[in-house]
Image (cartoon, rainbow, N blue to C red; front, side):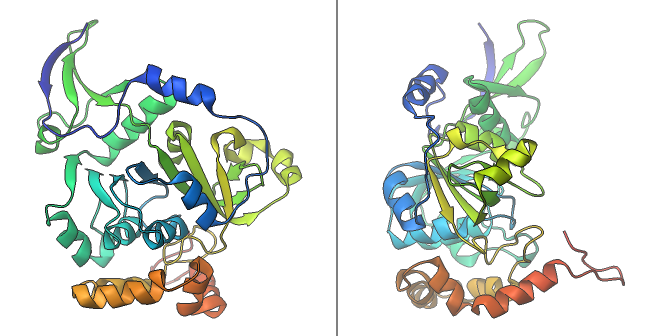
Length: 335
């Protein structure tokens, strides 16, 4: 029995009960079956109104943009969203007003690009219920779920306003008497992660930083993988150590070349800074944003058609070249 010393006042949007989560995962098939489908099919099957959604990637890297577009295009509603290292993915979902609850660690900011005008407007509108965390705290919550326990102890947040507005608790350690924060486990209903390579079964490879995506894949009840390219299972078997996410965690595999656009895909293509600036510009005017969304999301068939509106393969090739550009005068180098 822990002695609770302090607790945050924020709402808890998911049930941290590990036994209930185990009951669900016992029913999830581990069959090695072909899971290839379109993004539209994946969102229709696995994203439901009221679900708790989390997206993978890190800041502007490996954004599952195609899934975010489809969620907005399908006009999903009343989702909860994990604002964990979220930039343009948050911006897309906020534009569609698909969520009404948000665990906030990093949202609204698009890093050096500035703040999303519409994202800020939406979060200040009173339409979204908020609980505050740090990025590390959110990672701890996913780690707890991935480990199969109801909480993860840590030493962050104590003495901060973030703790006051979180749903964490401070307890005394029964062994030492020291104080620790307990972060409740987070089992998302559905996660979307964009990867470099995957086979038809869902075995996935990530190049570069993975942040909390490994834990996220283990914690999510349903997992949609979008991939730059499908590769044969034989390729996966040749180097099994490169598999970051195994097939039995995956529910859908969608081949979406350039699926992180306009975000960065490490070792593939750089972010489209011009298009991100356009998002920021049109967001200043709600009517302008509505017309923008009609053109680029609601009135297009799929993500590939969106890419065509943004310059298509010619623009992608420019971003590929930029990703590998090395500035010998001290500027940005290839990731």
